[in-house]
Length: 513
Ligand SMILES: NC(=O)c1ncn([C@@H]2O[C@H](COP(=O)(O)O)[C@@H](O)[C@H]2O)c1NC=O
Image 1 (cartoon, rainbow, N blue to C red):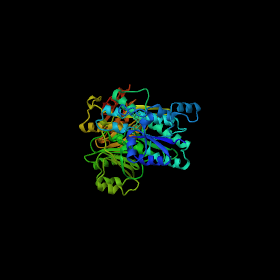
Image 2: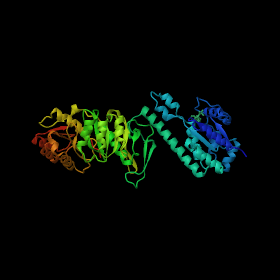
Image 3: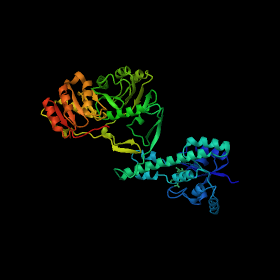
Image 4: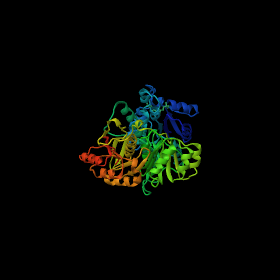
């Protein structure tokens, strides 16, 4: 009886020597390509070189080694089809029963600093994916392995019953196709980015499992967290967890919202988030002051929330943070003393991540709908304040102007009919998630209460009627910033003038649905 044949051709040679030794002990003949053969020979494993199977030299800088009917016929020929068997015999093609391939490191190559296009292109593997596809298509008879993690399963099945099970072969084939699909998606993305912009006829994104989650939004929903295959530096997926339980589905969404908000600010700032809306944003001369400002914005809602800070957390700030029940604290770093204080709290999660400004973020945003995916650029537009128009008689003071800039940055991150009341240090009242703008205005005013003498108000979109402006005028708020653009803008302007307040039109809407 002829020996079974295994073809080994791997770039990542981890574990290949042990795997090959076990295959030899199971009476497999090993065929291998240049580098793999060298590794195996150096380890006293007998192999047949690919060239003696194909009767062709490896050529064109390795671009052609395994692309040959002797290889692909051996992989694809159906063992149960007489005609196939006859044809294979006629052309002296011997079956190949097992293929172990991992591909040229394209992903790693394109992540290297200053990688040239030539280098990237040379790292596109052609022969490897072709073998994986051929072997996977014929998984009825052929075992295909792309991941050293699977060596053990394959060896133990071969040892126990003489063959892998059909279920294992099918699973491995599906895994190989996922792998080649993901590999090709990265290549497509890389090449597209070299030459094209805008939308393409199809979207081929690839993400890798980052974390199996205990459950989703609710405990009866299964969920997982996949991170972009090319890691993004400013992402919750890249944060280093220093302490605490693993993140939950809702934690990840909230933490992500927190990071997006933080990217608005450069000076020391603290952002507190609850259910993807800010419940307090504060700035200050140092991170302690910024945190205290964020805390005082809404000392009730911060309970059970998520906090991001854009400076190292020091001991003084940590003492305050430790007094509140918080799900997560994210900061670029924590001083040793701060860590000592905070790690005493078993349930808090501490994440370290360098913050980024909006101008450095160029990601797209994807939102799933039933049967589809909406894609848009992120709302990272940095507004040009010189184009803002003061449409009322009253001019803002310098302090009010600072508060207006701050409030306008905050309001971008509040959901649905967003209203933010703030001074130049912190938010005072936030109206979110309402189905009408006047409702949000009332909530924000109610929350800001007696703190309105230096307060300003930002709205993410125009006021459709003057009713909200009337409430604002009556409240004591000194200035409003909004995009403008309603057919009833004039009524709003007159109402603002009636109460002697300032109104600025930015001409930029910031919906967050
Ligand atoms: N050109 C070919 O026919 C070909 N056949 C296999 N490879 C790849 O060559 C690598 C292994 O090469 P070596 O054994 O020489 O180190 C593997 O990543 C395998 O996927 C090829 N290389 C690129 O396409």
